[in-house]
Image 1 (cartoon, rainbow, N blue to C red):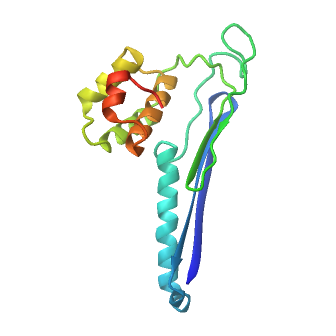
Image 2 (image 1 turned 30 degrees about the vertical axis):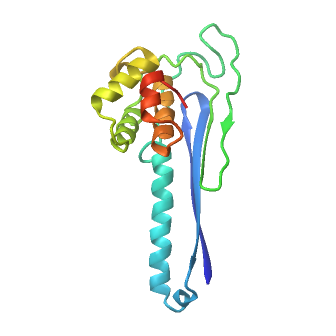
Image 3 (image 1 turned 60 degrees about the vertical axis):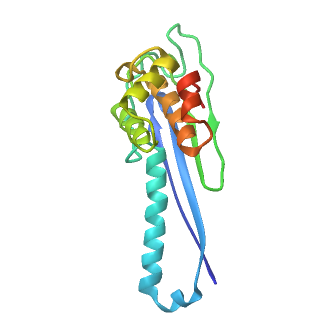
Length: 182
């Protein structure tokens, strides 16, 4: 048997000198006979690399790149000029890890980005039993406003909740009833 370990990671910059990243590593066993067929082995590697890349891109909200939004206050300070904390959050797991490191203004008052909203819709489509109406109901429970009015921070929390529902860590009914956030 031959062990293949394929990995992909990406880190993207965000507003106010923050960043977030995701990585995935896949390890599989393949027949050692593939060593004698380099084309077939390369096809297997390309396929696995594509899976890893797609997974990272999905974690980062689409194509994996984020355009920084203009800061409302100087970096590292809130609207009153008081320094903010770092807000560093990094995950570490064998399959994937996502993290955020924001030194931003922390008020989250700017609208959700188009990429965030596209990712919300992508996640919602992947959850059985969650349609447009139920998504609107969920955002109403969680934030007291419709999807179209979400701020960047609201969208981030909604994305975390939708991921938790999709992964089975939170039931859709519980999220809709409680407005649970992951």
